[in-house]
Length: 311
Image (cartoon, rainbow, N blue to C red; front, side, top):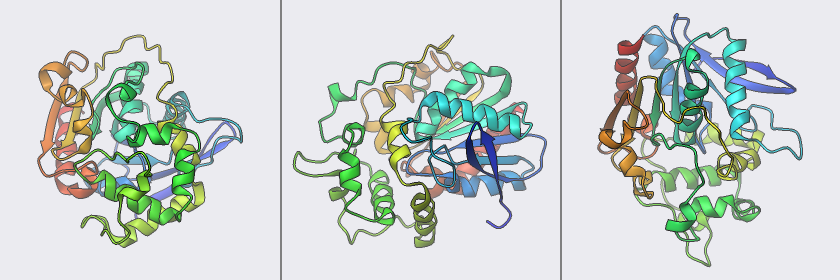
């Protein structure tokens, strides 16, 4: 970890935290999910730097060490895309590979559509390409579905506010490592789905948890609730909804997201290639939603093999 350098990039009035390692000519930029942060890519960043790449990850605005949006301003998907563009320019990265996990897959895909001249290829983990459109979760999943709960202003704040940040992150890591979609009963909150004595996943240490907790102690969770959970209704007018750059999807075979309505179909190459013509799909059978932390060596090799084909 000591080899990873840290700096801040100015985007307007905000300072965004950037982690970087390696000095190779080809750069890979990592986009985290929730409740992740730059640190979730630690294994991949070191492996890619050792293989001769420049690896960059950053905390989204309002996450970790990055400044939050001004009071009263919401963070949006367009902000995230704009921040990514500013970071590439600030670091003089003319063309990069993007690696996105969880909701970080969305800006990775959309950025490749909006700025194809800046993207060599896209790797996503845990979430296939989903074209822009209205969210339909409320039609297929019950009221207690965690995304519907966290979308509701005040609901997650009340739920999370009963615990310290470390416990909230612990509970979410445990929940999202399971094979079942987190759904609470009517008179239950999402945090109540985890018993207090439930151990962390074997691949996620107390030291890892402490690192996450310290970063969220700095940022809080308010912006993290805005994007993604309260921004799914944002309207995108993409010039072309097709992802045309080379793409790789890595899924854990036990990822609960595969049980979301329609998601499994989007991981099948025949169907997915209608929207992502140059797509490869790989499953890690025992992998869960945090596959890059659970099986880092396998994920690192898959990413390196993909990069080697498209440099």
